[in-house]
Length: 609
Image 1 (cartoon, rainbow, N blue to C red):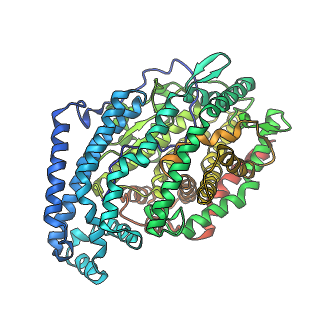
Image 2: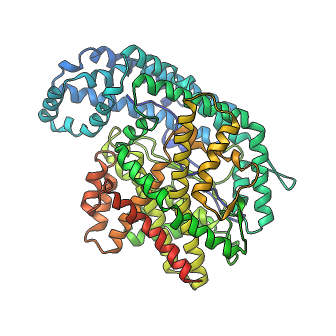
């Protein structure tokens, strides 16, 4: 069964927003499409229904799954799907309210109470996946052959049965389910609330984390330095707590993995993503091998543009000297992205329209709001919601394009139903990165001169390095962290040393690393919420680069094939989704094809010198 938890911020926390004013009217979420209020009678009704239906489901099916006919199994699965939908609606509402203001005790309590109530209600359902996985293979195949409507769910069953070798006894699985809300979920919440409550003293001004990260993209070098040093100073004061969070979560994961006999710390993520370990390893190796011709080469160029022999870490996301401090208003950002979407296919713009008009985006930076950005699909009988921290920098426009891509994908996949709509993380970034690429290409085509083109190209290369190089470095950091934790408790200095080992390797010799940068692992939410999630960004970027190359080559019917891929949601494996485009992610050369697009942009920048 699904674990019903609140939505998590999933966009790259490193790609922070810019600063500015006069942005126009920024939209705010209207969550009434989920529930009118925390005390809405509909919400109380749904929670009561979950209590009753989960108990009835267990009474009807526990101990009987292996004896069900195909028609009866279909009814069982559809009831299960309805439970997922109702529980998902409750937790989506509670989680989205919470992320609007994580420092509000009432919102935190409401989310926690909903989580506890649903954890208790769904406890009787733990038997379902365990019993289903005990159905012999020949009996399972007979069920699939007997009912086409049941066979439609086969991708879900296959993913579930992939966990068969690693499942525990019924009693232990029930225990893990019951304690989930006070285990990882509680540490996740502690991390979120701590991050949201941090303050940073930048030249006498007290700022939150989002505004401080923003200053790392300011034109004035002294401002960037002040922000970087403020981040390090504040992180240092809470480092024991952050180290405790990471030690506890990594140890908890190691214990569960050991009991399940999962071969590596990464195995659970690969199984959830329905991707083969060798495919991820091929991606990782291709990117690491490409560090010298990607990040090392680009940052050597950037140091030259900035007139520096060696860059400091606060120069990594610095604007170019010829770049203006132009603020992009909300209306312009919307028009830019929607026009880019419409040029590709009018349906893309139409699908994105309600996000702007119907309260599906929460864009402004407000006190206590979670940092970063995400798109949450909620449930298939509602619609997605997008969260931004929009402050008007050009990169914020790309973040809007990214998250809207997720939203469009989630709307299209909703037709698959609750159990089949959720796309594995490796494919979940496809439409988001493709949306960014469409927006970038439109801006590049409309550049008025070489200087503007250079700024756009450099910005895109930096975004790609942040998405591919930096995320693979993050993945390597996590691999080292979890391996080291298996040998014993890690001090903050131990974790910092692991962080610095991947930073130097990935960023290259153009950088000097200030004292205090060894603490910057502390604020990355993915390490806490979703271990090993980060390679999905690199997977998505490489996939989209290869996909976009097919589009540029004039592949006939590309748009229709693209829409069919998005509509598939989680109903197909990546091999089946990419086959119509003549692509195969299991081929090591596939990743080189994607990486060559980045190196090609750097070639173009070098030719401008």
